[in-house]
Image (cartoon, rainbow, N blue to C red; front, side):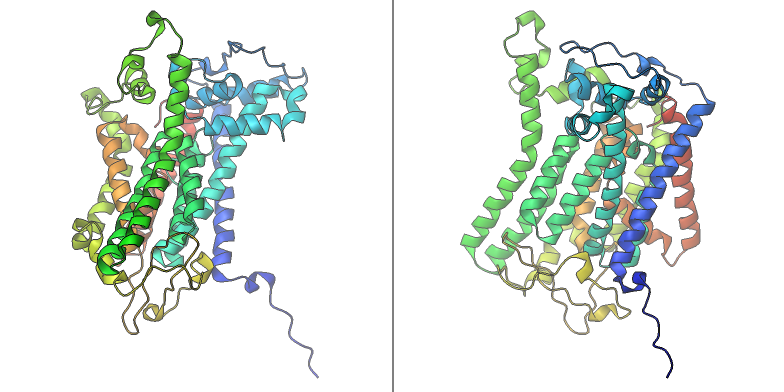
Length: 500
């Protein structure tokens, strides 16, 4: 008798989506190692343009941090000198708190996590390398771990929205090597924002509404534009209310949906409001009139707007100067990609876009009922990519929260998948607002990292790479763009030269 065949390899037992998740994590880790290696390499060969980051006066309201041991003092100094640009502010805030008015432009989530890690898990290292160096290491650790998790959540979100695992995998790998990669491996808030934003969107479209609200609120505690994520909840609430009131004729349910959507959207704004109140109390409350900033006496004392305008010159059309032309050129690739993605989607879904998605509401959910019971199976693992996409059926996922119905596929009627499906619409609106803000209001060179956490950019790039017309050319161009900005960014940024 012939011996039994050997058991299949462990990797083959894993479902396809799980293998893709492991692959995404591998690419994310490899990209972070590559970025850190490039940054160290460039710093070894070039002198920093601005060496002021090494100047570290004692905190104003707390005793100086203990110095590192003599043996490791040179290593500690090298680690501290690696902190550049906004990273200097984040490390200072983590060590000393918010001492000066301009530091309130940086939101507290990253400094809080840095301080937490330095005071708990990493605290035994304080006598060897010093507290400030430990904060720097904590910042690098938070940013790089958050990036790996953000890439994983982008894949999961993409599977739900695109219903195409191959496109989702391509988009996630592109994100791992995105043109703003150097910021995701530095002490910047980009990685944390991407994690909370993409994770919150994943939980929202998975039906975990309460969990998504918490994650999106944390994105607002990480960056100011995290508040814009409330738009996803508003968009979903608008369609649910429409469906419940006009299609289902359940007006009481429509009011419950509307109320729940308003509350969840308001919660996402809470971190921003609390941070502004915190700044107002520290900078305006109990001070003499000659010590007050001009914004303290305004009817709506928004500290953040004043700081951005006063210290960084941010404002509508204020950057439209001839001398800023190089910065517009630097941001032109990401802005062009964003514009082309919106135009391409609009040409294919013009009626859907102009109707704010209500055409899809009528066509896709008019035969479904908002319910509180049924099968719960809308995770990435529940979606399989078949050769015959027309037989794909999407079941309603229900949770304790109010649910957005998903279409039940009719036999013989193909469900639309990929970048140009109706599910992508709210992401297009969000990307359009972000791109317009970056171009007309912000320092335009920041657009590269400002838009780098926008999922539709990677979905569109993934679509271009396999489109029928000239796919090899587009794929080559996209990868050259990413590689060039990774090399340029790691060279300039890590040596304190202006980049984005």
